[in-house]
Structures are given as C-alpha cells and as structure tokens.
Image 1: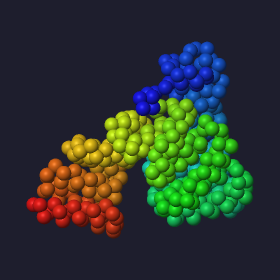
Image 2: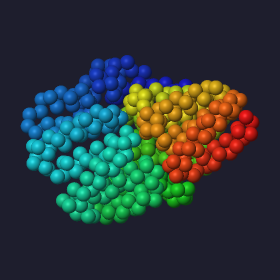
Image 3: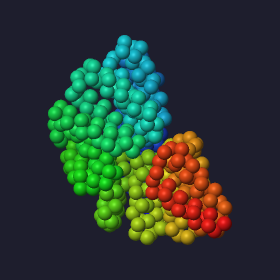
Image 4: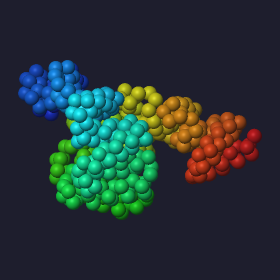
Length: 413
C-alpha cells in the first residue's frame, strides 16, 4: 500500500524510478542530463515552458492563435484547467480577428472550452460552448459530420456530469450513430462515446448494458491508443467502479491500481485524474474494511485536488465528505463532524447556498451530532436539510432519512 502512495518519480526517457532531475515545466522527471537531452525532441512539443516561449515569439495572428491553442491543449492534459481556459479564450479571440472568423478553428476552441468547463464543474458554461460548436459544425460541415458527432458526444458527456442521464444517453446514441458512420466502429471517438454511454447505463442501474459498453470501450482504446494511455486508464477506472458495486472487490482494486500506474506515467503526480483514482481505491479499501489505508488514499487525493483545483472546488468538498464517512465508520464522530462541516462550507462557496450537496451534508452533520448526544444540534441540522430539499422540490432517500432522524431527535429532546 505504501508503494501506491509514494510518488515513483519515473524517468520520462528510460522509465527508471527515483529520479531527482525535473524539467522546468514540472511535468516530467529524469534520471540524468543525458536522458533529458534524448527526450527533449519529444518533450518540447508538450513542455509548457517551451510553449510559453513559442507564444512570445509568434508573429502573425494565425501563428499566435495556434501557439496559444497548443499551450491550452497541454495545460488541459496536465489538469491545469484555468490556464487552459485562458489560452483557448485568447486563441479564439485572435482567430476571430486574424482569420476573419475561421469557422473550424472557432468551432474547435469552443469544443475544447466546453471540455475545460466540464472538468471545472462549470456545466452551464460548458453547454453554452458545446452548443455553439455544434451549431457551427452543422452549418459548415453538415448534420451528420464527424465534427457534429464529436460535439454531440461532448454535450452528452456534460449532461452526464449534470446527472441528466436520459437526456445524456439520447445525445450519446445520436453521436454514436454519426461517428460509426463517419469514422468507423473502432475509432477513438467511438470509444469515448461508449465510455459515456456505459456511465449513463451505470447510473441508471442497467448494469449489464454498462459492463458491455465499458468492455467494448476498453477493447477499442487498447487497440487504438495502446495499453499505456489515458483512454485505457479511464476505461479501467469505469470497470473498476462497476466491479466494486458488484462486490468483486479484488478485481476492482486491480483495475484501479493498473489505471493509477498509467495515469502517473502519463500525467505525473499533480493531476485531477490521479486524485480521482486515489479516491476510487479508497472506496474499495473502505469496502474491504481497511479504513486507515482508505484515509491515506483520500488525503493524497485531497492534497492534489486542493493544489490543482483550489480550496473551493466541489471535488474538494466530496473528498472531505468521504473522509467524514470513514471517520464515522471508525466511531470518531467528532472528527467526522469536523470534516462534514468543512465540506458543507466548501459546497456552499462552490455551488451557492441551498444546493442538494449541502442538503446531503446537513443530514450527515445531523447524524454526527446525534451520535455525540447533541440532540438540539441534530434537530437544527435535520430541519435545515429538509428545508433545502423542500425548496428544491426534491425527495430522496436522504431527505426521508433526515425526516426519520428529525423525529427521533425531537423525541429525545
């Protein structure tokens, strides 16, 4: 387990672990200057320091726009989404002015901004950009063009992130049909659509359909991208999640560990996808009763997410909440309450007051207070939880559990 938590610091050239020499971009390590020199022709294409120099030296509008777009691509791959957003916006602005509205370039910048905003949790902004890319694609390339299919795929993925599963699935099926027709059934674009379709089926509890979609996506991604690719890592993570729900815990853990190794080699240690995989491993370890090991995984993920996404991101709140669950299971209700209250504050800052995540946290807070014999505090938190769910017009298992807790706590006062 300690090996998973430790940063292996692999040499980007020869894959040897324990390296100390690091590129100025902080993305890759090297075991020595010779390996760094050998790897430079490949690395300079993605090194953000080199790309920044290229931006400064760019002369005309087209060259400047392309340089910023290339930098945005690398920032996005590294999980530096705010930097990627800045580059894509500037590239699009320059392109509109210099290219006199070059439609394909503007389309691509809108699509890429949509991906960035989705990763940042800014879903409405993501949909705005992606619908704009779809509009341009349909008008310039046709209703059933590849670019239209990719835009529909991205819209479906964003709707999936917003928990709008049926709407997402409809868009993804349309994208799947277009992309199979335009690029063939074993293309990376098709693998992406199948991955998101699998997630829709997964959340809709259609587990056989989910497993089939995930499995086909993994097969395509291994064939197209190779075993050591981000796409394969994502497929492994999805299958791991499904296997975990099916209580095939050893198999799920093996999927996650393989995915973690890939993501570390591709992205390094400071990436949100690495953090998400630590969280997935923590869930399996919690299911296996290895609570201390699960906490170590969550703390590793929390450190990465705070560094990359900032203190006030909903992903940070989710990890804090999960740490609270583990503390509660350990019987440490005072520590659980501390984590829940911190997560509640982050959700409010990230999403605004009276959001469903905060309502869920209030139920957890009420439960922790009840365990600490603070019945008055439990009543107050449970009432606030129900107020938010009522205002939002939502009835869930959590709201019903909060109502039950409220009855019990009021009976004890």
